[in-house]
Image (cartoon, rainbow, N blue to C red):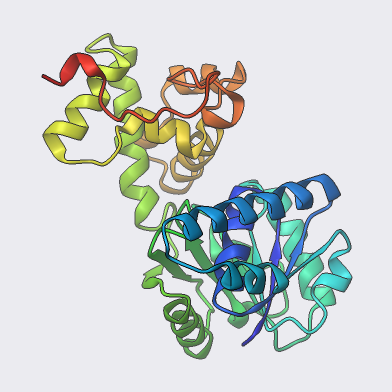
Length: 296
């Protein structure tokens, strides 16, 4: 499999496109917005420049990587000849089902269709297609070019052949694929999101402040980033969506989103992407992981 189509040019989509292109796959990156595609290519170029400065790649590698990416606003043209399509659209079940219905109609019958969903059922997505054996989850971690893990999620009908091919392709990307079964939140978010939600609950109850909570987890639990800062990084709207999927899927109140999270999302405080979440990003990203007040 050498021809890859990536649906969606946002943070995850451009990261996935970058990763495949850098490993010499031919990538078609598609988005309904031409401006989003322009921003995506610019982001990829800047990320490649950072790798050059760190002497991880050469200028020739950058040129080759960018040459491997072709952008489209027309999905029909973008999927032509694709061996694998990776959907990386917004974490919205109705949107994803619509995209997969369309992909099933326009893609070759042998094309594997993958979703980068962080929580939505692969089996549910596969059910709206005529190729459920060829539907699979590829949950990349953000930032995609740097993070090694890929959760490879089997739906109820996903074939062994498709699973093995996607596992091998992930290894060829320099990733570490882990095969998991199709349950709400899979492994990563089933464990991570309740921790983030409990951190928000701890703040909500006034047990400690934002920096205090994050500092306890960084210095006490050796986490590279505090859970509230991580929530800002992921996007509070995404965290809310994942928790709602797990609450619906399991019917367990322990997954119920904290009211503070719900209110912040309604108020548009989504984290880094909106400029404000649990922290203020109006002056740019936070570089210090632990406040100076805790460092002696």
